[in-house]
Length: 482
Image (cartoon, rainbow, N blue to C red; front, side, top):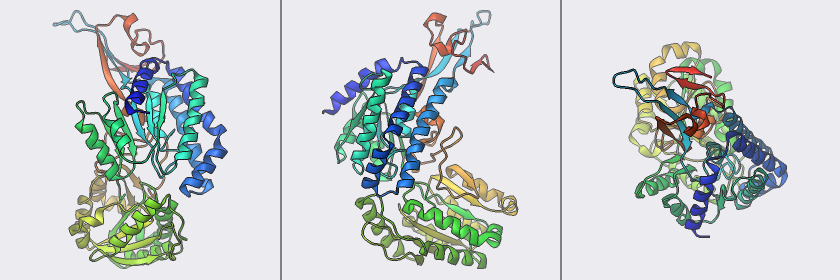
């Protein structure tokens, strides 16, 4: 099918779908969740065959997928997310003040690219799709070629929900195929109004460039690259090194490191306590059995990147697991000095897999220099006792400028789906640090603020009418009321 026909269908469906009530859209999201749940067994089996991910992980991810659909359904049924603001007319003022009301409205058809490392939660019916549909946008999904059968089965479940809910037939469409041509065509089509992407820096940056080349540029919300620096402060290492080594070995090798929040850089002050921690962490990582990666391309890229990293000047291998078999990752821990890290940009690049680099700093000044040399991140982690956090406040402040999520004494490889979550960060972690791709505020990527001035009450959307028929929280003349 031609891209133009796909986008024309998406635009036509939007003209109907945008006017569905929040209750109807919520029921649609719930129907998608139910349809996916009804197909749990074949979906998980297909994903297992295509991704090498273990069944418990996939079952958990499918539950996460249905749960976030239900979470967005709850959000839009309550309704206050539209951020209704009302400034009533004041004709007695000089000059007279008109009646002005504002709310968020959907932008139009959006293009969502499925991710390879999350065949459910960040793919066909994942968070980008769920948040866009909740906002009132129609969606064209570009299925990831690494798991085509999984993507197709998920789309079929969505089609069943479309039929059951009475939504426009082309509210959601599914596009398949390898290569970059169709992705470029979708992004550059004049009817596309936004893009969601989770993947490599190269892929996300290409989509961003395509969108910028259009006659009318559109936003690209791409989550791309992060090394998620962890700072181990002195007192924590002195008192908890064995426990921390086990915790972070698990985090580094979880899912064979195929998470965008994998802790790729570990920073500490040179000395006996750091040395002990390095040896304990290396031993823990060496004990992890290699496992298959998602697909051949990711495995080959990791092997190549691992070899390159371990041959960089002043980088030393600390320890590694047993030699892997075909398609398996080779977990490894390496170390380097702060000086070497500062002068070698290659050491700051993401290596997608179970690899982490310890950066040894001689003093606080070097540690600060290392942090300030880093690009934007999804996460940064503080590992410290109360004594550490009191003594190192200035360094912790620097950490908070680096990432969308700042973590205290937890590994970063766990992203809770909730209202407060920020899964985003300064470039190149994402293309727009003002937004998140996880949590309910992800809906804001697919809307725009629209102001209605001097409208009569019967012309206004329900969210802005004087009687507040939806019963939502609104800001009226600078007061929040319901």
